[in-house]
Length: 211
Image 1 (cartoon, helix red, strand yellow):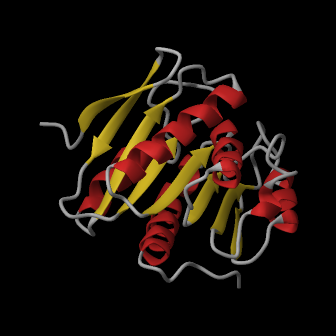
Image 2: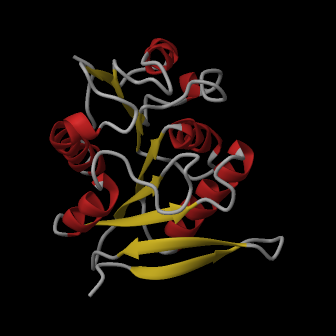
């Protein structure tokens, strides 16, 4: 038995986005999860997305995992996330978090900066800075930011997250994991705890603060 139900978000151009909705009865908070250029139901840190999406329902937080229509097109990915934000607001969710890995990290930063509906917090894992650095400063103070990266990332240097951090407003937090690569499998347990704590605090209205 799956913990989610399949949803299709219809677009004005007759296209649609595939999603997996993890419902939490009575929830007013939700998380949108996106992967990187690998596409499909991509997830970092040893199954972080489906694991946390399931666990958070016990805390009254729903989740929507998105499958990018084209994982190599940033602008299309931003449209996908913005469509998901609008969908969840129309479904009655008033507090939203966006989580993205790799290219998806830049996508969720851009989407949060451009969304007409407010986003409560953004979490990025091994994000690229390209496409996001010019707009990350538009987040905050109402939208907090958590950036996680490994210092052994051979795909995207941790300098990308450092650059985003420098340009972001408070509240913001940066975590660099020694010896961790791009997918963060080496520190999956630590990442799981960090992201879960952050989302619980942020979506309860007590978003994280930088150290």
